[in-house]
Structure formats: C-alpha cells, structure tokens
Image (tube, rainbow, N blue to C red; front, side, top):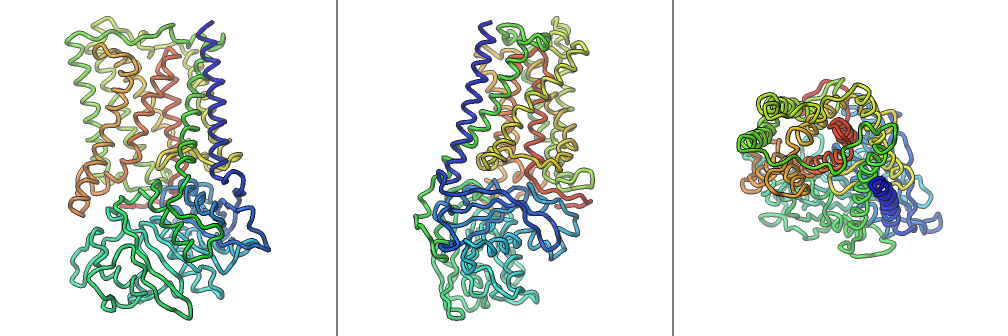
Length: 621
C-alpha cells in the first residue's frame, strides 16, 4: 500500500512539474504575454500547404507597423528547432515568421520533382512566408528581413532570386547562417544578386558542409581558409570580381559599406569558431542575427544581441520532456498495482542479481565490449556500403534510415549475444528464461503491449498538448520531441518495427541478461555504467571526426565514410537516456517487453517527426 501511495504521489508531482514547465516555456517564448504566437497554414504558388508560426508583438498594429523577419530552418529540422531566434527578435519588437519547409514538420510532403525542381514551391515554401508577411497590416512591408541556417540559407537565396523576379521587392535585408551566399549569376559571372539589400554572413569556421571552395587553379580551399577565398572577397566587394577587393582576406566582423541606388548597404562576415550545427543551439549566432537586423531594419525596442533569455526557455522546455518521461514511469508504476495489470507487477524490492563468479565476469565484460565494438563496426558498414544516404518510396527519410538500420543491426546482435550468454553460461548457472522475465504467459504479453501503449500515450499526450496549447516543442539544442501531424503518422508506423526490435533487444540485454551487479556498486551507478557504455560509440565517432576535421580542414574517411561523424552527434545523449528510462520502467514491471516497447516507440516517434521526407528512390551521398 505504501509503494502504491508513493507511485501515485510521484505521478501527481510529475504532472504538476510538467505543467509548470510547459507554462514557463510558453511565458518565456511569448515574452510573458507581450507576444502573440499563432500557428497557421499558408500556400505556395504550387498549391502546397506550408505550416508557419507567427510571433506578433502586441504593440504592432496597423497604425504602429513593425519590421518582420522570416527565419528558414535547416535540412531535417523544423521551425520549432530555432524558436530562440524568434523569441529574441520578437521581444525586441520584430514580427517573426518561422515556416516549416515543404517535406518537413507540419508542411505538405511533396514529390521529388515538386520539391527540387518546381519554382512555384517558392524556395521550399519560404518565400511564401515572405509574401504572407508583406500582407499583414501590422507589418511594415518596406522592412522585411530573411534569414536561414544551412539549407535554410539556400532557401533564403532562392527567395532573394524570386524577389528579384517580382514586380515589387519585398526583402530588404538578408542574413545567412552557416550557409554560402550567392556569389555568381546564372552565367557564372561574379554578381551582386542581392542588389541594394544589406547582407550578413555567420561564418562557422569548422563547417563541414559550406565554405569550402576552389581557387583559380582548381586547388581546394578549405572552410578554414574561406576568408581569403575569391568568394569571400567578391562578397565583401558587393559582387564585384575578387580583384576589386583591397587586401589578402576579408576582415571578420568588419562592416563593408557602399551606396547602391541611394541606399547605404552593408556586407559583414562574422567569424565563429563553431561546427556547422552549433547555431541551432548557440548564443553567438542569435546575437549576430539580432544585432544585424536591429542595424539594418528599424528596431522597435533595441536591446543588445548578447542580452538573451532563450536558454531559460530551452531549459524549461527540456525539463518538460523530462517531466513527460517521469509521467510515463509513474503511470506504469501505478497501473501495475491495479488488479488488471497485477500479473505484470515487479516483485517488491527488486534488486540486481549478485555479482557473477569469475567465469560470469568474463562473459559479462566480453559481451559488453563486443556489443560496444559491434556498434562501431555496424555504423561504419552502413555508411561504407552507401546505406546511410538512400531514400525509397517505402523508406522516405534518409536520416531515419541511418538510425533504423543501425537499430536493426544492433538489436539483432544484442539478441544474439543475450541468448548466446544464456544458453552457453546462464542456463548452466541455474538461470531460466522465466526468471529473466522473457518467458511469460500469452495473456501477459497482451497486457504488456496494452500497458506499453498507455505509457507511450502518456508521453505523446504531453507532446501534443505542448504543441497545440502552449505552442512549443520539448527540446534542447538538437535533442527533443515535437508532434507528428496526423496525416504523417504513417511514417511512425513505417519505421516502428526497426525501433521496436532495438528497444526490446536492449531491454532484454540490460534488464535480463546483464541485470546484475558488476562489483559492489549501488543500483544507480550500475544504471549509469550501462548508459555510458551505450553512449561511447556515438561520442567517440563524433569527437574523433570533428577533431580530425578541425586539425586538417578535411573530412577524414573514417568509420566508413567522410560524413559518418556528422550524424552521430544526434545520438550522443539519446542512447544513455534511453537506457536509464529502460531501467526505471523495469523497476515496476516483471518483464523486459514493457520498457522495450515504450523506449523503442518513443525513439521512433522522436526521429521521424522532425526530418526531411521524400517518397522517391534517391541517393543523397
């Protein structure tokens, strides 16, 4: 009875804590109610729907018009991933519009031909947001800026091109984050395609995607040498040939200015010692963007760009996700104490099995190291064989395909090592599959699935409430969860088998096969050990890859390809948190299936909700 009371109290506290985090996040994002946040849908000229979020300061009216900024996110991210830019700009009086590109987030999923070749999609839907901004009666249509990170920079450049083709130029100021400006015209000549618009560039020094180029002899110029490149010189010379530039390289932070058609125009490159994805969660890019638009547009409420509060928003947001996971854990704890689910209840005071004998220790360490090594080998083979770069009509998400195949390979291998250890060692020591919780009655299998679905639903309920009521997702930097539109739910079920197998396999491994002490450590330290071991592959691959790139300026062909390390950064915190969640849920149930199904499903949902989707057969390497 006491444990049931503790579980109920934990559930109530988790609900209150999560609600507090959601309210806090919304208050911070809306500048404590001074900014109205609305999510709506607009259409491109091709007729496709684009989901946008509009941040409107309440003092912006038809009589007191405000400048506007459209922010374009990067590839395989969404508008919510860059909420910090909207937060900081809107609290300074700017109207901010953040669209989901087509084939991302809440926008329409279009065909390959439509997305890549149809000019009427308006820069993946971004320019349609510019047109929308110009039609708002509380926006000064002569003061509209546009900014994009990574592929969002490409969309920004396309939007400028489309703006040049129109009867009225809507864009008056441009900023590019970790993305190349347009240096030449369609004929390949140096050109000022930006006209009399001021343009800023956030140059990420350790960028593996952009800024690498060639000199006149064809010699490769690395990203670290960009400031001395012909492209940088032409940019700072307002589109003239590089020979017009005075000096050996562009001065970072220096404002180059000139008069074009009676308007004072600037070019500025801000150098940041950062990797390509850092602007998605760093303060430097936010400050540069804010200061640039406050300088080139009329800032309604000037505040220095470095005066930021968005990190408090991000902390509240990710704590909201932690609260959602706690709700899931305590929901399982409460339900297993009910009559219907009582057959799934863990025995009281469930403890780790005693430290194995010397032979058992050899098995433990051998298989633990082997599982870790296989993670390195499998991801290297996936990229080496080109499987990290494809999409098909059936598997339309390139990034998800990487993790799905990795999950499948490691899930199968862990099942092999777990049951191998059972038949070759555990069974001889008196273990049984029933003791492991692997062999359970069929009715308990059905109940386990039902209980897992309830646990999953408790988390997703928070995610959808956060999105539709509080206008936020639950994330920090690269890691978090957002809602999946109902018409995109098929993507979740498409990839679910891969992640389910992985979740159940890992759960059997750490909650059955290896559910024992290593020495005399407490349970929490044992949990952390497995969390750390599961983080090692992604952490090492990321660190080694970026370290060698920083030292040489060249992406090294290690771990199967030159791009493997760039995809592993997303997995670094996800795997250890998944392990801890598996262990916490297992404390309240008597089989590994419930935590395995929950964790596998949540990993799948988190992955497919935020990445680029295209139903075609395409190799993206």
